[in-house]
Length: 450
Image (cartoon, rainbow, N blue to C red; front, side, top):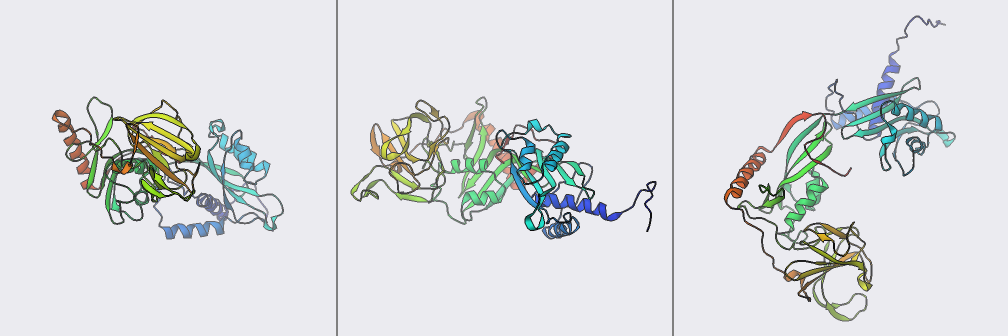
């Protein structure tokens, strides 16, 4: 038998391959492929190459004897829970949880982790279900474009790696035809929920988003965003341009106002005094204003509003600036909000699941602001919004209201708008643009929900 000589450094290729494959396997398991580090440029893999690499990694990074292949276990930190306690909930040994916490703490202050933070673990469970699971690796994001990865090497030790992705600021021109819904189609092109919500609010001044917008209608959205090397959007800026069915809206900040507004190509403010509907997303108008057979009592009676069938939790927005008159529980209306607007108009909203934060009598609201959420409270046969409108104290048909357009730019404001419009048109013609690569997010962009 060959004797081990401690003076010689053993040259074994398999363990090194095993370590590398294990690290790759953990990243793939966690659903977060490794990004290139600052000092190493890696080629972009095709889906076929990724699948092959994943298979090879699983084969090379075989679990320790008696354990199954690693599986991904997502963990979210609970209120009052430490990082180590959260790791324990993945089902691993106390020693493993303590060891990985100590490893992470060498590069990141665990006190900075708050309830709700998420991380991914790779865990091997015992064959036959007897015994404790073994922690094989862990990946935790520590910033918009940085993460720490812990992987177990062939000798059982935990190895820590810090990965930082480069960030690029870019202006995206998302152009396509509506397929299914505008929201889903825009998301397919990289638009975030904030961008889609802003566009829907603009289009709601011109269209009934459920009845006027059809599949194959063309749309274009232009917006700024910051993306990582892996293509993950981490920040987004304001919507710069939106067009649907030939109606175009340009973002413009009037000099001296510090207020963002949207104008058509001629310089007319697209903001009308009253939006067409208080919902951007609903299935249908389930009941119009007028006489009908009541779905609960069975009697024919006057329906003094419009009903919009929508999913529970769908946001309800104020169709115009106003002041909350009441936000309370009101008999068969369930959770109820009433808003006073200009020119003697008032609007009411019934059957809400809940009110938006801060909604109470005396609270001012702006057009497009979320005031509550669709529900099924009170006398209701299913989730929907009951929408009423009054003029000078008399109920009227909400669909009959005709509103006026906003201001029209002139003079120096119009000249400044035309210059900004020309700049946006050039970006659209070029199909977008990219800024120089930077190391961290900045420039006043707001963070999106993860």
